[in-house]
Length: 237
Image (cartoon, rainbow, N blue to C red):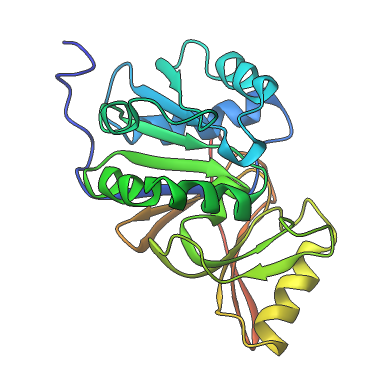
């Protein structure tokens, strides 16, 4: 049976946001295997969107290296323009969004109407995923270094998922206190945070599972009153 005749595990809308990749390629592979398993395809079609890094050639090469052997790979760039975007996007089983500058990425997508195309893909059951910018872009709001290392709150995310999000919760020392400050003191929407190597699996808008490729890593619900730990299932254990 070919990949295209295998049904997806779920036709429901699915997103997996990762706080960051694993510390090693072996750890990261555990996360990728989990995500791609959600497609139900034996050899999934995977599209890479390097918009957040300005369509950098180095990021595109790294994607093909990292995902080699995992499926049928392709990428879409917006410079000079996104050619055949609709045809390409809707032919996929999964779409991977790179890390990088979230604010710039969202602005480019919106100019081209690509935000609406991504929503169509999500509603069609194509699995959307990524780390860092590829995690937080799906929420209503997020904590981002798009405007500098001081970290700022961005309130105009895609809004597929409710609330706010913060990646690299244990990977960058400024992330946790800044997110807690924004939510606790500056009226920022409450939400979720993820350590590096942790994946948040949403079905529709419901957080269905938390997984990790790193022992000891976790996710957190963060609100005005503080944070509560969401213990993940350890992959490969």
